[in-house]
Image 1 (cartoon, helix red, strand yellow):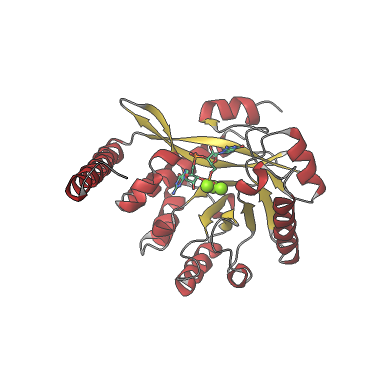
Image 2 (cartoon, helix red, strand yellow):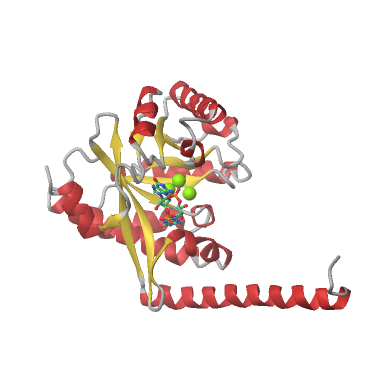
Length: 279
Ligand code: C2E
Ligand code: MG
Ligand code: MG
Ligand code: MG
């Protein structure tokens, strides 16, 4: 039995709620300033094929917070979406990613490299300015769309099927390709998979964590893989954290591999040194 009577309980919860609201408010006003001051950088995580060759990498945004230091995306993306700042942030990310790609191309560092993957929030993807921004920025930065993979989670794809499909078709014409991120964690409707032009799916890492000893996860991964193969879509596994997982997943005929075991996300300079200048 609670010692608090109804009114105390109410004020306890409302104070707690207020605190949460305040924290969210602080975070979004900090984010707003951070966007104005462009306090964001990109880290890059390598992606390998089954022969252990680097074929691409994923750009992951980091916030260079004046007090808290470098923050990973998990700490602020949701708030950026809730406050709609994600659109401005997404534009910063796209621009920085294109600039980096252009620099790597100019320095002839992209031998064997297929595409750079960029995460886009569904909110930004569906925004009326998105396609035009991509077209304009590709041109400004001198980048060919066929070097870009857009990663997007499946949420909203189904409810906005017509819009998603129109946006994807326009961007496809510029050479861009699309990857479904965190596949299996959302609705995972099968019907849209073959009706939208996805060329890759990324199996959510929650299925990989226990894949070696959890039969259910093995079955899920197995069926996602056969689905991908039958639709002629590349299957990428994210969150590969040890060699046993890697060997197991290679046997299961995954095409592409990403995770801490293969390489953590690192700064642009470190990425160049570790992966682009070595060979
Ligand atoms: P995601 O796209 O699924 O990215 C993978 C996340 O898992 C990254 O966290 C990455 O650092 C982490 N990760 C990679 N390999 C491993 C591994 O082996 N084990 C574990 N435990 N984690 C691993 P991060 O950078 O904090 O990003 C979190 C999420 O935030 C991303 O999930 C993506 O949805 C979103 N995000 C990241 N960068 C951007 C961006 O530039 N724009 C947008 N809109 N969203 C972004
Ligand atoms: Mg991603
Ligand atoms: Mg993912
Ligand atoms: Mg994720």
